[in-house]
Image (cartoon, rainbow, N blue to C red; front, side, top):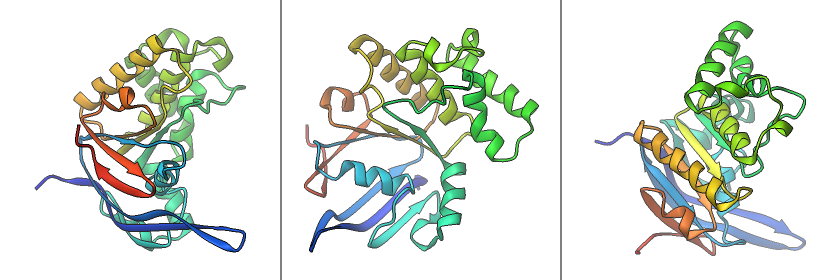
Length: 227
């Protein structure tokens, strides 16, 4: 049987809007297998950002069950969720979220230092990951000295350095020109070939088509893509 990294069962999530309850996720169920590259495709207001926050253990949900690599997320305290997020998920954001005062190497070391690695061990592991992503000549540069594509490569290195069970990418090409965006998506393809499990959130069908499988979120409901 294929190993599941994500198992969502009947997830509901609402927000209080004044006197109204706005239901954003309406019974979401989703399985993601180890090594799969999945795109979650949806327009603004569809619930995809809320679903990403749930998958990323950044937001609570009202009901349902969520297992991340056999960890029962729905039963966890906030402190346990923080630990799970740090150990199991590598985040890749549209705006990179690199820390401007730190070098590329220091940015990529950060998740390892949080986990308790020594500075020497963290630096070696971070440098090796950056080298593999073609960033070996940029270790001492700061983010504002890099192109958008280089910043996203650094952010991908940071997401990968702790060898997470899941890479969660939120509109990863949204801030890039089309040529650089294609380079980043090609890199995602290579990461998938190397066995990484990737969930990518996007509003763009052309971006989603780079994934192995597409699901659509529409008005809080999830549908397998039929194209």
